[in-house]
Image (cartoon, rainbow, N blue to C red; front, top):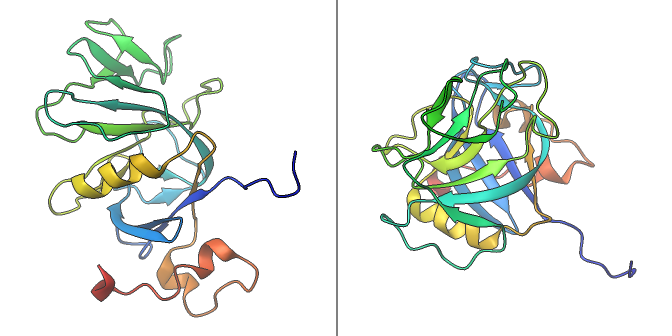
Amino acid sequence: MSDHAVLPEVLVIQADSADSALAWAALGGRRWRCSVGAGGVREDKVEGDAATPVGEFPLRHIYFRNDRLVLPPVRLPARAISKHDGWCDDPRSSSYNRLVRIPNDSSHEKMWREDGLYDLLVVVGYNDDPPEGEWGSAIFLHMAREDYAPTRGCIAFARKDLLELVSLIRPETRLKILSTPAAEAAPQPAANDDDVEQFKDFDDKDW
């Protein structure tokens, strides 16, 4: 590898506070408002707790509704969603945390939704290599509701912001979800933690 090789960019997510689902996302000098799980941001996530997992993860695939949007040029693998697509959330199934065809006997959620949340989504590589235990499934970057309502564990963005973000993500881009909310990190930012440092000047008026 060259000494001048470009390091993978990191998409950093940090909640505003421990009791808020509002968060900021930052990548390559850009930042966007987003929301995280109703169950908070947790290191001990389990299936059904509506929490967003702490940690650093790859970004796998893009799925989108080609009847509702035109996908910009992207570098991750991308496929249009069909009415027969589902995502298995049954820890007892051999298809747990996988795309499945529906109808399906295992518990699953439909990818083809009327509410628009999955018109565009990015699959996060959480608990998928391989899926284990009941540590959670179906963690996506997806569309937010107008009020940035809490998610069931995913990270949600405004439509225009997610369209911009997917055009910037590369196969080597990592997603890093911070455990410390901005409200706790701001008074004493870590001197050597660039991921926390970039959030210290965030202010609601910036959004």
